[in-house]
Length: 302
Image (cartoon, rainbow, N blue to C red; front, side, top):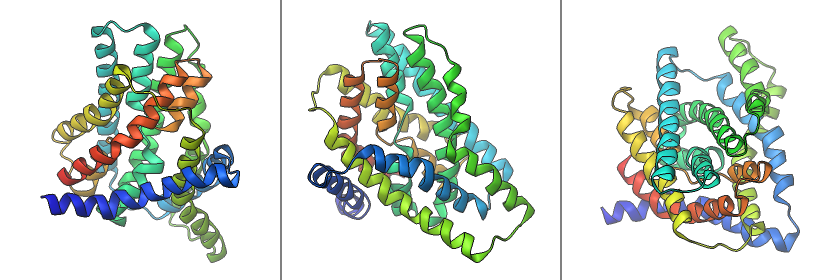
């Protein structure tokens, strides 16, 4: 068992965190800006990856439906758990809303995609991409709703998720897939080059972003919020995979995506809605570091 844990940590966890570390240490010294890197990934590289992946994807409609419902239920459930725990601990409305935001917004892309590919192989990338798209929509809706709720803000921003470049790239890719249309070689090679750049750029940008963050302060609220995300969500994912009869890569990818630390995007939303942004950023930092341990253990189970 110890040998297996060491192997997973060395061959799956370490490569990703080394690249994060490279961004963390090189960013300030080279004058790199996380905003430039992340925006490049958001508007160019992620849409190319989604388009490239879904253009040739082969996934049964019935299985895809079960996966979408499953991962939606998992993240709605962890949002409810975060809400009830916040209320039970008598936290103020802002902290309860922050708990919910942190619980639902995992790092599905930057961490989820490379970790799952390293652990489960390239055959898991199609279900991983389906989960990635679904979880981003669900997390955005629940997260922004929670952030708006504490201040009585409008939920109109929820629908802006439908205009994200990744989703805009999904529609033509699926259409071409269904119609079995072959694109010119020059087009596919351009898309493939951009798609292959997505994961390293996103990981590097996370390291640069962490270097820009304020000093980490750990208290009971940070530990509680991190535990909800890193412990509560994977437990729910493991349990709920049974009634949805998920097996193989569909099951493994769903559990691993649900085990990711809180995403930097959560802190961006917290800043936008004045939802304890320093606290949310501290959780992003702490959960990322703590995931060194929790992700290793979950991967042993999966």
